Image 1: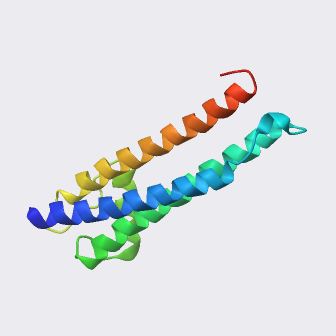
Image 2: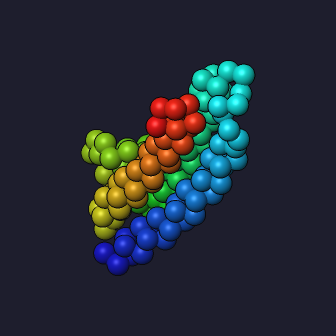
Amino acid sequence: MLAQILLGGVVTSINIVVQALAMLGVMAVDQGDLSRRRRPVLAFAVRMVGVVTVLNLAHLAQIALWATAYRMFGVVVDADLAFYFAFVNFATLGYGDIVPAEGWRLIGPATAINGVLMLGWSTAVMMWVLARHGAAFGRG
């Protein structure tokens, strides 16, 4: 059980760093006052696409980190199945069609907890961007 907790903690910590770096990407995309643009609504839509793209890429990287850890520690040996298992758990779907190796049953829930936190953080960031620009349009 200790190995599972340690692995989960290490991958979660790395994913927090990935998410923090994604926040730098969001800040790079979310520059400037949109209300001064010629077409502020269109500029806002384009900006939100950029923000969500950055966040989605971060989540794919986080899922890939989980899949890599699964393969390194023999949790799920096939690369495609490891990525699928990581994705299903990160998104908290938990289909249950892939079962980790014996002795690694806690790693799925650890992935799910990490996924909930990272997806929640991304949701908060999207809401912050929406609120920030909604106020600039007199709607927030």
